[in-house]
Image (cartoon, rainbow over all chains, first blue to last red):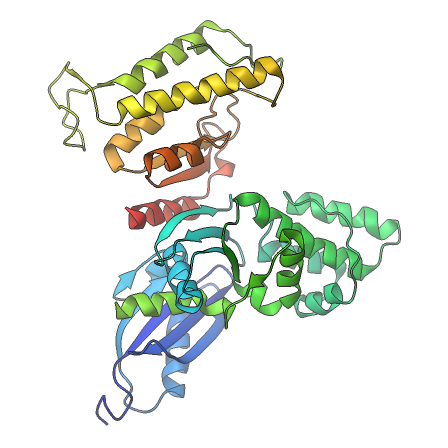
Length: 260
Length: 160
């Protein structure tokens, strides 16, 4: 099958994060053709390869990946990538593709969170990244879920079920877990504690840097927990944009940059 | 240039090493003492013993002066809390080399305040150059994350 028959050359972006590996394939028009997400696991190279195989399996036979850009903290483990770019650069490109105006991107991942400022032309102007500490990241929510003996996937619905939130520390996961014990002893509802955990994440990211222009929320935490966008919007006092496939904006940005 | 007054008991407000450091900073803002070995930037003269002014020295000196005066005023008037403020000298040297500023936020060092009080944001705004703040320390390396530092540094290079 020729390239024309299979829709032309395709471009691939792989984002190997601390928790999940995301892969996006776009065509030369910038349209998303397929996307894959796998847990990153312990062998980043093998996971990236599995993601690629799965993506190729869902594309028409004869599809050709013309170029690949790898991003995320495991990007150097993707041996078949043509280029390596930081996730900060790729998230900016992926979000601007959807938003097309000046914005502040808040990316909340499994281990990192970032605030990225993008100007009207899509150029990144500055960024802030979290410290080594896991506060305000997906890892924080994972720890809270373990403490409350809840499956991670249930946090969103629990937090959405109440408007009451307990006050939890926004600077330390270990302290927050200890604070939860106090709230449990005082008889606080689990829903309020879970909402308090989301509020803690929102507070932490809003403390990082001033959020100018439209705020765009990305990352796996935003994808799996729509309640977070509502809480951030409530704290900010204005609307928050969640692009399509927020977990894949880094991989999409990498694919777009591969095309360039 | 007057020194910002520290309202906290620790660190001591007027130790000789700190005063010496501040005068060094004032001097560093105006000039760079070149090393005998060749250095990275062509804008710095590489001959041994030569002191050469660099382009950004003037604006940065003014900016630092303004920042210190603001802190001094705030500490004296009580209009804002001032914990401590010392140098931004290293930022000047790094800018000369890389056209961007890398700040080292040494977490357990109370004298290291160059990346605090909104200083990086203000300098970036004034000079129009990107920056990054790397969280680390001089003693406690548990604060430092190699991966995060690498990503932030590479992101800065991408911006350049």
